[in-house]
Length: 281
Image (cartoon, rainbow, N blue to C red; front, side):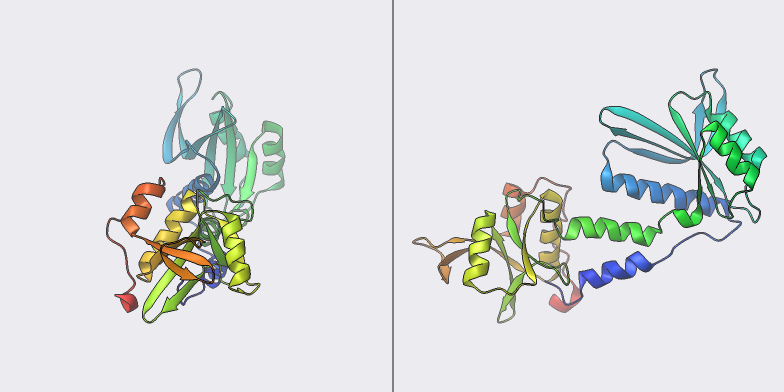
């Protein structure tokens, strides 16, 4: 519904590379924390991510951990401690052994080292022996790429997404929802079933770039924000009845933004006042 292609914006983000400079230890820790936080936000619930965390082992000893995170999957709580090495030399064997000592007595904690400048052979061997996962900075995705992943997942629903309860069309080229203009007004369309959307697509002869997608709650939130940006109005479309606006055998009933949110939206809170881009104000 916007002039800028969301697909193009996502492609640019995927190619971006926002990484800390060699030698800046704090920047590396913050980068690693942000990477893992974003990954967890994309896939998991009940997550905790922290930088410069104190971790206590089974004997009461307290260790400083650069980055620490927890998440829950299938009812099991997972704990990960990450050591960040942003030095001009490769990580050495003694570095790995010192970190392994920190985590070996901490029940259920997995140890990970992230190095900005690689590993010596002895360090890699020691990590393998002590169950420490080693990564280079290049093996971490950039923050831009992670933002792109989030946009990709939330802006355009996947083929398997089910409407909660709405369905609409998205462009496979731009990843933007279908709309039409009348005078200076922009209208988005929502359907209460896939069958209604497919019937509309056939009768209105929408070309092949438009695909039917179900809006899960996060997609409905993104859809409302997109409508806000272009000062768009939303129509619920269904097969024709005795009342309402009619178009090629369909009835178009406008739904107010606040009513759409109050009656159908249960996701993260949206702005009370629509954020309209300057060209549409």
